[in-house]
Length: 144
Image (tube, one colour):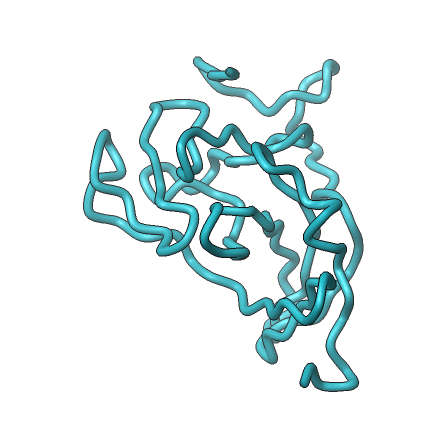
């Protein structure tokens, strides 16, 4: 049973099969962090929204993370992270693992159950460094 103070995020049915649900948390130190919720086929998991190779590179840039065959694709370098374990075995992020955020699925509902953070809102952090088209700066942005 999910704790009464857990925050309901969405439902399994509403979670994109090939994409992500983006939300923002506040960590205990007061910092705000973006998180992506993904359906890995065999799991529902949540990860802090940045590539382990280059921490200023967001995996979901506001329109869903790129997913392929149960893996989250870094839009800059193409490294692929297993959606269930967060581990990467290829590309520039090889050998690294995404940082997890605890979520629980009960019936069809998905809850934030990580006691190290608080839910702030759906969507990402307003990034003042974004250029006028709303896209973060990067030399490459893969989409499929």
